[in-house]
Length: 370
Ligand SMILES: Nc1ncnc2c1ncn2[C@@H]1O[C@H](COP(=O)(O)OP(=O)(O)OP(=O)(O)O)[C@@H](O)[C@H]1O
Ligand SMILES: [Mg+2]
Image (tube, rainbow, N blue to C red):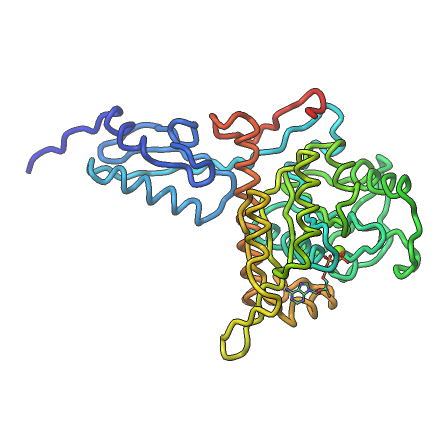
């Protein structure tokens, strides 16, 4: 039996040079998301840095590494290093321990922003993230109903408002502060800004991976105000497929572009209805989501079917991804959430120069960039 020739570091490096990072789409060795820890006989010890503990990401990397090393007769042993990147934290950032701020918005009313925000948040939670939901709809808060939660938040010793908790997530809504949730609120602009600022500044959000904001209809000043106070990770634009919805959503996209809020992607809600025979009916037409995505130069993250359960479960206070995780809609939301995590990481990678895979350290910015 012939002795196997020892494998040199150089051959291994060469073989691994082609392995591309599934999140950052660049060679892993080059951006530092893959490092060689040593070679023991036929075993190549590697460390791979990933943004989240997602089994799909792991198996994609593992497979690519395995295939590259196979011609050398070598086997990888990968040590996983999970580091979730963070948005830049401004000097006066009110929530420095919140890694990502995601705006769920549309420009158009009634397209399912709140439904998407609630189910996106819960999907992120179910994928292991620490999540908060801020109901930024001061005039028509939906979060209390969708999460079946009411009650007056307490203050803590530091004078901060303690958010309510449901399904392991932190929730804050103007609805929690009203005696009668059905009271019409006639607040004007400045008060609205004040209330929202308070929800960011004076709520004890603690450490979060994602803070999901459910924005009101309209292109609104809400996103604008927030974008000036802190660096948001990006927006998820919600639309329905039909033409009439699109004009308003275009306005939403333009507003984001104007104030420099990156659009992570587009969710097309109420895309189709699947009947009991498994036939797909496109009740509101087709292609709207893709049109918005093209205009926003962002990916279409998912098409959410119309399902009675989506509305019923929301009305009952347990969003569909929690109540019926095996439903088509829940699977579509979970897919959206996975992509939001990936795209958020990629956003941070690009913002910090796109040459080194980000670590969990928060990049600091001393002043507002715009
Ligand atoms: N995929 C879906 N299938 C069935 N019903 C849905 C779906 N998405 C949303 N709905 C229902 O449509 C209604 C409007 O949804 P939602 O409140 O999320 O919209 P919105 O965009 O937040 O509205 P607003 O502009 O008033 O804030 C709700 O009753 C909700 O349950
Ligand atoms: Mg809403």
